[in-house]
Image 1 (cartoon, rainbow, N blue to C red):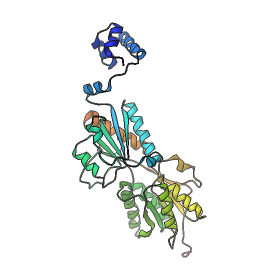
Image 2 (image 1 turned 90 degrees about the vertical axis):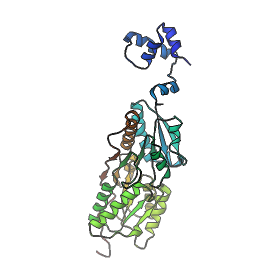
Image 3 (image 1 turned 45 degrees about the horizontal axis):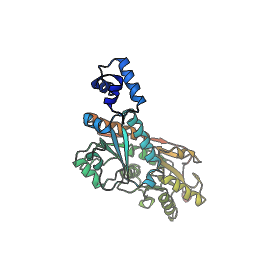
Image 4 (image 1 turned 180 degrees about the vertical axis):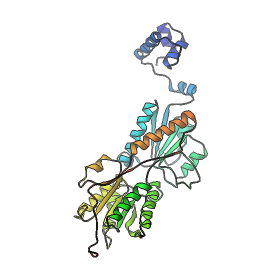
Length: 340
């Protein structure tokens, strides 16, 4: 491996001048800097990461911790788009990424082993005890989607706008005449599920209506469970007139079950999808969607973490990225036959 000393000898320039040039510091003439960089390129010089870390007290790496298994993560539009957003910002600020999948033991090990400068935890659960350890040890960290407002620990977070968008969607469905509105949630230890279910409940309550708990089911966020839970809902004595699906994975499973039953959308059942994937835009009829800006969530989280690393603080500790409610062809007005 080529060293600064070897470049200095070949260029017949002092070690300190070569070091300043290669680290983009002032005090080096433009022609000298150009000659040094040319020699460095010709000799395949790369700065030694450990030495650079000692000088800067940083290793230039962001740790990405994903709590789900690899087979789920790498098929999930949610995770892939968040990683895309994180990568965009990391590249912009000259950071590399280190990925840890299905981590169950510690969120702090990478940091204290000096392998990363800070960590991003993606898809945390509300009852995740590893977050307590993360906060207690004062590791530079950001979590997605974060914790509830009344949580005993406070870690910087980035979340999608969950409550308002679901409230708008349910309010819209109620205005169309739907009362048997099913909701396929994720597990209730997810902030996404808790906030979206609260919006669902409040939308009914504010209209002076009562929802039927039998139409609210929990999934594991997977396509398989979307299919299974939609089947359970369609087997009810009075099947729902509408279903809201929690994410990009659940929606295709639910649609497959609806099609398998020979039901028409929206004539027999209306569908609202929550998600970020462009794949949802390909379905016919076009799906009424709560569009989540997941790439932007990843970008915001990476920016927040880099500020924590470089400045020790960030202007906002809890950022919420707006969502968009898009009305398309998969929802229509509804009137029960017994009321007709």
